[in-house]
Length: 186
Ligand code: SF4
Ligand code: SF4
Image 1 (cartoon, protein in one colour):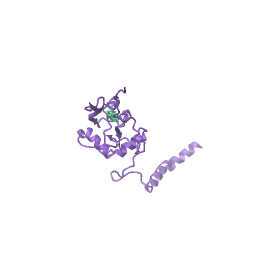
Image 2: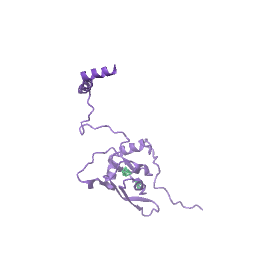
Image 3: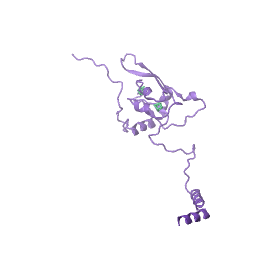
Image 4: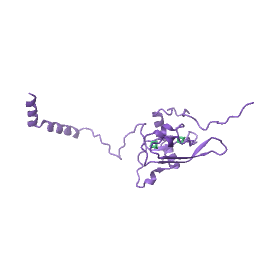
């Protein structure tokens, strides 16, 4: 019985007919291909696009130059040069900050490692170039991306439960600079 059914299928070329039917159905269905760049997909908040450096709401740089992101990066594409703020012992900032985007694997470890949420990932993905030196992002470029795509970076941090959604909340993981040295009261 099974053998005769298989023979009939072969004679009638049923599998080819079924395949043609699938093609025929899709000819009149709604297309699923996005006509990029005229049409772009809506990306989720968890999307890992270009990295950005962020500021607090009052404009102060969040980064304290602790180097934790550099230590966490598996691709070794981050370089941080930190310096002490004159007159403020133990309070540091990143005087230079570089990310080599040609090496970045978009793992997000640097964002997780940062104690002050100074780094965020944006939905920016259109930065291809013919000159790979343009992909060596310096501090200025990273802050420019941070300013332009702050909402994306904020949404990324919220989606990864690193920051609260409420814009008025100052619930960063840690708030620097804090008073490290306190005067002894007599
Ligand atoms: S996303 Fe990953 S690879 Fe890219 S800079 Fe951060 S830690 Fe390094
Ligand atoms: S971005 Fe964050 S982890 Fe990296 S040096 Fe600045 S404060 Fe430290």
